[in-house]
Amino acid sequence: MASDPANTPRPAGPDPSAVAALLAGRPPMARPLPFFEPEGAPDAPGPLFADWLAGAFAAGVLDPQVVTLSTIGADGLPDARALVLRDVDADGGGWIFAIDADSPKGRQLAGHPVAAMTLYWPLQGRQVRVRGAVEAAPREVSAAEFATRSPGARAAVLVGRQSEPLASLADYDLAADRVGRLLDLDPAATAPTHTVYTLRAREVEFWQGDQSRRHVRLRYTRTDAGDPAETRWERTLLWP
Ligand SMILES: Cc1cc2nc3c(=O)[nH]c(=O)nc-3n(C[C@H](O)[C@H](O)[C@H](O)COP(=O)(O)O)c2cc1C
Image (tube, rainbow, N blue to C red; front, top):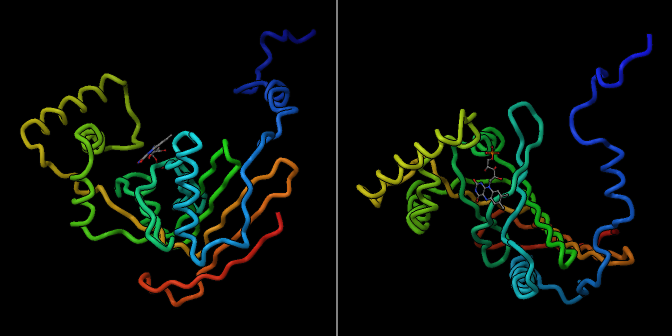
């Protein structure tokens, strides 16, 4: 008997051929891009990042402060998510972000205190990659950073339970209302697990895309013993 196509189980998700059709003939960065001259690059990655970030804001790149933070899970698998970069120290040795230590990424960092950060700015075809060990700041530093946040941002942190299963959006609204009332009563309420982290860069790579694929890559590698106050960097041009 011929099988009924309507009863044939279909794989979940989009038809791969439809995705392939959407992707075909759309190479990324098919537009004029800025030129990057690595010869004139500064001795340390910090000033170059500050320059690229200022250029990204000026050019109208959307959310250039959003980075992808990659960590290692307890199961050994990599994990990654977007989050907001808070600061980079002057020479580019310390990349600062603030998250809930009690979230999956916070627990992953407790188990494996290393991370990678990736930024991609499509309008300019620019990528920045950072790798290194991660350190949590002392409690008072994290509390002070939390206090600088807007009431809405503090409330979002105080709701907590990030990445736990949520039965319904109404449950979230109830929790958010409770936190709103708490903040009305105690505007200085703190979030004990809100934590500032510094990714101590061992390597920082600047990648400038080129329409004709003559991409320019410059990697900074730390060559000092690890004192954050006195960093030294080696610069290496990489094959694209
Ligand atoms: C543009 C953007 C910005 C985000 N910024 C943050 C952030 O600053 N902090 C944060 O904890 N999550 C942020 N998120 C949500 C994270 O990507 C992620 O969903 C959340 O942190 C839970 O991750 P985890 O389960 O790996 O801990 C952002 C997501 C997007 C798309």
